[in-house]
Image (cartoon, rainbow, N blue to C red; front, side, top):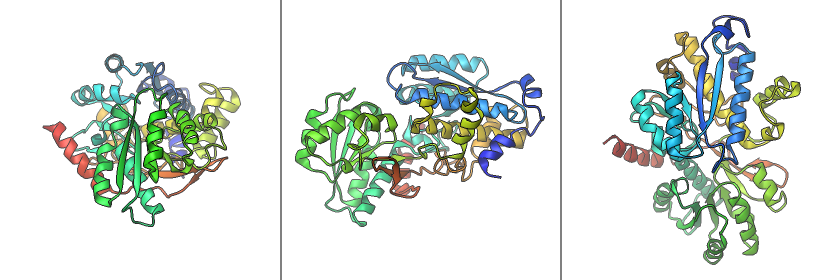
Length: 412
């Protein structure tokens, strides 16, 4: 039995009623403290909708070990203090697994979660060094960190240039605040290691004025431009590239590039654009089809179906399938109720888990809370995303050297 079916069909290890015994049990709760009103609204509604849809599907199958699951969604507006308030309030209500999908909020909540011994999930956000489970023992950035993504992008560029990066120019265009600045150290280290020239192009928030920076790109003529921007900034970039006659195939985006961005750029104009990702886009994945059949085809979906036709919805399915699978393992191995300690052990038992082909396979251990950091590069061909690499995790020695250096400073 594949792991998605095992999660959905085999969840009731204690009790057998879908809404009988399960409805009387104390729910397993996940606190979803998200920015639903300000900076990250291009992605958070889709991710939150996926989380709630998956919870509905799990409960239809009897919950986890006969225990229902509950996803509690609250807005923090990307404000650290509001994020702390959300964490504190839900903690008092018995929640011990949290997700913030915001680097500023994750940074604020992290020391409290560590002290309180509550699980802080921070996939795709937060501190890159939190993959070091020997230091950040209650923090789980499962999936690729921005450091790992950037390293894999360089590995792809090296592949394009036949294994030799000497003399190659790589531009890095980034929002000039912590999210965008995160990969710089890794890129500088790899530049020294591989011999490519690194050119930095900071962009002021919110990314609506990029004329000057793309004019500089035109003059510098890098071979590739790795881009750490979000939302509408991709559309602005495409217009500036056209104005400066810069080919679209030089553009390699961080994972935050979705179908809405492609539509805004133009499906033909966007041909050749690339992105790194750790999830499969589109609707041809087993878990997505299960949700369509059991929820949306019956009018039971959490939100508009249009929000499901987006790679960020699939990202949410991947993130929360990981969380529910860890809970399933905890219930199976240590019984109910699931505790913070048993859930932690469940997370650290995930091995080669890919939600039946939805995402890059992850293996989480007590030492590696990231799961391996695999991504792949995809290219838009005018109609669909075409993989340019397999799932890869390259330069892990370099990434972990930086991780250990940074985490040791936190520990001190």
